[in-house]
View 1: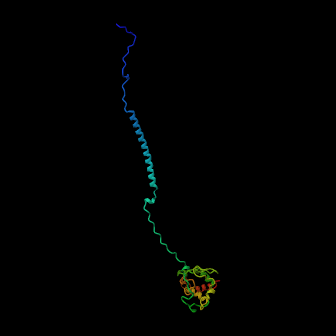
View 2 (view 1 turned 135 degrees about the vertical axis):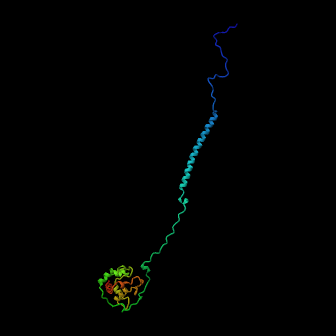
View 3 (view 1 turned 90 degrees about the vertical axis):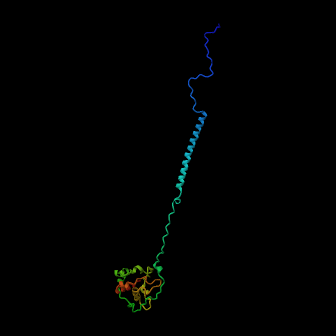
Length: 226
């Protein structure tokens, strides 16, 4: 019989496997695979962000380019109106007057031209010269003052100036006195035409709108013009 100490604890044989406190949970994914998946997701998110950013810029550029195109490129050109025909300006009275001579258009003899003097009233003639009666205007007469100047040294309006016409009329026709020449010029204005003026400009209607006495009044007034 062998002797063994009684107070020496008994040792259990060592186990080759470590002790487990509970059941072990298997790993779902390998760490390397997890890292690859995370990197792929990160790259995808970056690519998506770049696509959104560049796509918005491209859309904005195309919109701006379309808006900046000139209207003429998208619209048919408007037809241009044909230029309005131009009309030549009406010639003035002075431009329409051909040169004429003092030769009589419808000669009057001294007997046909009436008395060599006049019995008219110069004051009444002055009123008629400024304003003709309605009877003369009704047949186409025009106030003498509209077409003739009478002030000394005055120029042409439509007809020649009548300043000093009494002295001038006495030299126009050798066989007519100044009163006869003026009388014929009122009754038939185209009988004697002054150089530079045309026949037919002065209307020949005064014998229809004036009495013989009124014509003599005009002749008397014209003879007094300085």
